[in-house]
Image 1 (cartoon, rainbow, N blue to C red):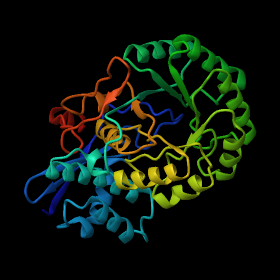
Image 2: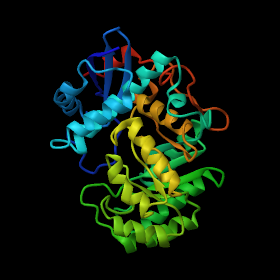
Image 3: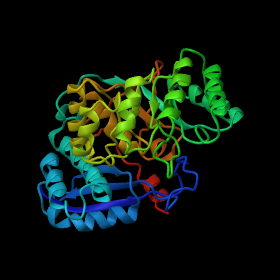
Length: 371
């Protein structure tokens, strides 16, 4: 079974505000769906955290490797793409594109084998997992309502991120966290993401340590991206001294980039994003490396229903997975597949057991989001 073609699907009109103060460029073209089609007519789907123009360029660039290649060898093929693109890739956009293709190839492989991707990744440690509803901070009154809505959708864990947290002063940050805790009570897990990968992030170690101490007083589960994403020395020091777990590394690509962060215990929780770090193949390698170094693993998942499905299968196949990120509300999650995900009474997501990723694209929605 050979790869005959690769189709891309642009997503416009439903992009969630990512918290960037000046928006993205382009603002409404952050995620692209890729579809790998075989000479037998079978197909698999993946999601890429990169704009459609860059994905199209990356697929064209990688064509000499994938065109006519075996469609049922995801790890070997994506590693060949990675190795063959070192001089013009070695991370960044090319690795993002490889990520989506890898997810699509695993979906296809599962369909051919008649097995869920989680079993093909090595075995099923769990058949459900708790998602955390991922939302943005806002002014206290807006934030309180947003939290009530998120709890109303069934989430038992919520992550609050980005603006205006960390952008004014310490008192306002504490007001936001106090508002959140008082709104949801003690039974809901709260997580905080400072968004240190924002352009020109101004804060350093001492701000992060002081803020971590404040967050711990409100029983916050972890503190994510409190420093610039390349400040490994700051993260090492913060992880050692902060009174709550430190999380990060969502911007990294390729397993080699994650190695020093894991080996030096720069974070307590490592957060690769399968739609840009290298796909399921690479995320699995990173997760097992983390397990062997006693670092927790939680996928970063600010993406689509296809990305969430990939994260669910990865979480099923790993002993050290704790949550999956669930962007909410989000049209690309709730409308992009024919049977949307739903939380059970305990706020858990069931991991699909049908072949491949266990999802089917909603073609009407794809057409609507094509722009």
